[in-house]
Image 1: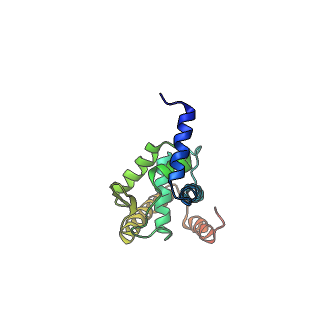
Image 2: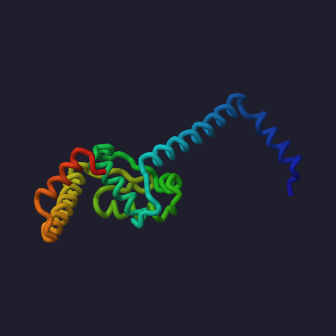
Image 3: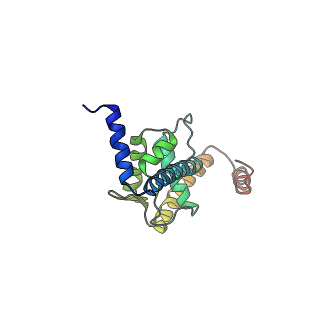
Length: 169
């Protein structure tokens, strides 16, 4: 078994055999990697706000955030999304939660996986058309429910106008 003094001696001999600027480069690389990791986590935390107490599963919230980003034009075709591990770490959730969200988005055609590389946004035009169709279908259902409950057109229009002006958020 190697004694600590011998390990230290070996390490110093190894360091002396390396070019003088190697350790500086290695230190800079480690620092750059750490800084980039922190920046990525901050961006993810700002972009992916999840409510842990809403009653809506976290994986559903992740799916909705990505879909919303596509509809708003924040993500384009072939854009990469945060890696499973990065997103899980930034949100403080289990990796399997993010995997479930990404897999369901992949099945729905929103994301496409490239093994060993990551997940990427699919064809944005097709995704937008599908998501808007889905949203309008839901809106029609809500409007029919309101109509069947006796809510008149004027009341619905008042709410619609307030939402459109940004007063009802």
